Image (cartoon, rainbow, N blue to C red; front, side, top):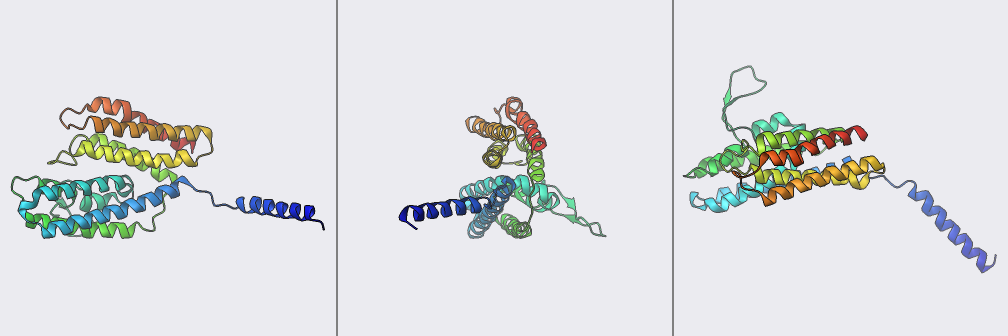
Length: 270
């Protein structure tokens, strides 16, 4: 066999091998990317919770400014994971992570047990009291750390499908316009507007996974439109983040409502 034939044989073998193995390349599914992102955000939230708890333990009532900064960082990490966290574990989140600061009944027990509220909303009210009760805050921060660790551990093996992502996203938009930008979730700090920015940015990233991984033109375009709408909504908040002056009607009309509808269209086309 001459040199020319040997070179052709080598080239043919390499080409065939490349084609053969490329056909078995694992396809990247957007819901898998969303799951990876969610687990990462959960860990970030757990880390922020632990950091907040440590700072509260070392602080005194005079360290309010430093604790407020740590709390706002904690809220930001929570909002990034909230839409799937609440979708999969609404009862636990509402009772232990971000429930209303109201007395409530213990669930699934024979006796009538009234429980004290705990979680981020209670921490919000405690931190923004005129006189900071550091002992109460330590108790709340410790409980939150424990509950977040429990939730993160429980969600490590969670399976996330496209349907879950679309439904959770639409529910989160409803939550944002009804409980977020109204201030219900942040009764003392009124951080609901800034919270919405973090929520929309995270949802925009979520749908960018669909834009990048879809081959069907219509689905790819819908995902692009949803991601763009959500990012524009986040930018709108960055420019207009005063709670009292924020134009909620314009925000809902331009960003929330269109995104809500297009997510449903995307769901139906996927």
